[in-house]
Length: 151
Image 1 (cartoon, rainbow, N blue to C red):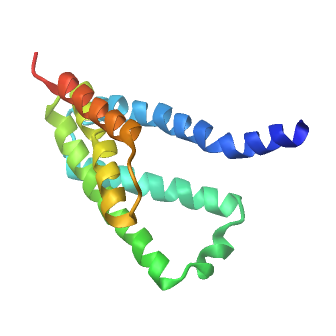
Image 2 (image 1 turned 45 degrees about the horizontal axis):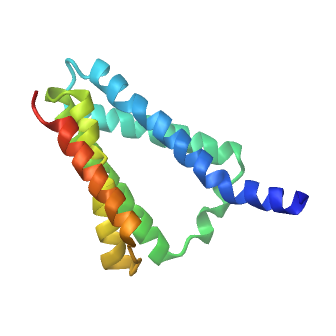
């Protein structure tokens, strides 16, 4: 019984991390909207990226993982670098939208990334999407539309 509980606990860490990610992500539009009243969105994105880089560099150093940098092969490094470009473009567009749009509507539209990720996973990773995945993506899209509609 103990082994089953330990295995379940190991496998379920991703759920905890996913929920924590959502909680931290929920603070971003609020903090961003509060801080961007008189700041250019491009500059705000750059400051945010610099803070993230410093913070994550400190975490890598504190956890002793800096030595692993040399173990990343070129192909993986390319894909990881491209995620940095995609993330920078995403955040730049996010802050541009957040500067003039309502935080809740911007966040709702941003979360349609789930819908795009389902499509991209099918196209580029050959992941299959069953009816539950497609229904969930449809509900996310419908919810985002309802939340972003002008009142």
